[in-house]
Amino acid sequence: MADGIDALSKLTRLSREEVIEAWEKVKANRAILDACPGPHVFKAIDKRTERCDVCGGEINTINAQWYRTGLDHGAVNRKHDGGADRDVSSL
Ligand SMILES: [Zn+2]
Image (cartoon, rainbow, N blue to C red):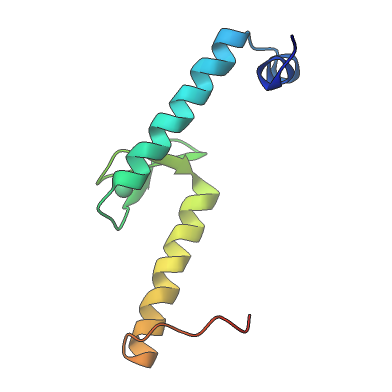
């Protein structure tokens, strides 16, 4: 019976076992990132990947840059409104 793993296997030309192994690595990395006390401190380990010095979790450089931008914007918001959460309900 074909399933999502078979579809990914065909698409990526990886074996079912390799697809499952890759998915397990993704889930383990997600758990590491989620358990980080934060904030993450991402540093490049290659051209496309950054690793957090605090938790060891890894993300791609684009997501790391957005994470840093979010931290910067959060810091500006805290400075401007004294720490109150901005009302985003109308967005
Ligand atoms: Zn971290």
